[in-house]
Image (cartoon, rainbow, N blue to C red; front, side, top):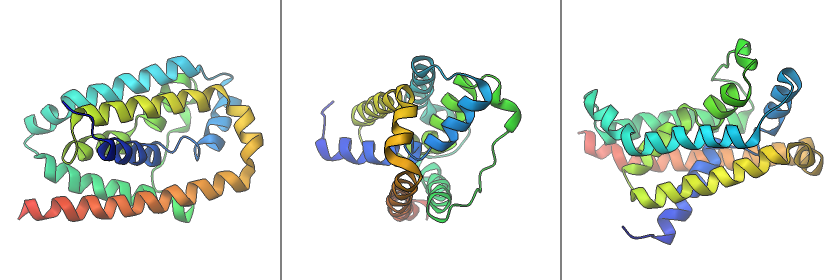
Length: 192
């Protein structure tokens, strides 16, 4: 296996946009207020485990279910498209369960906020285009960033302010929108 810098950068950026840990700071602060404490190390390790497991066995699971990677990538492009619309337009299309705030480190922080449907869909979609090693390194880079954000949640909220967080969320929303369109265009041709 070879590390391709372009694949690594693209994978890292896709996952960074999908995970949207910086844009999730307000949500994380709300979870912390409601549940008391978020354990950065535990949340990061659980999310890392989920994402790596999905990287290695996710394709086997979808193949077992009779779905090919290109179909999953097209479906994933729709999920990414709607996530991007949420980020850009400031609407909530994916509803979260408020009763799950009790075990905040694992649910909803590690899953589904960090390693949720968007992350898993992105990993499978990236597998259709990039080498597994590059995606794995991109996941590790993103989990390091997630840990740093979770560890410094209060400082980051003060530093960025509401305006800074809103701008970052919109910028990464537009990037994610473009990625979803490209993912759709590059995989839909294999379905016909």
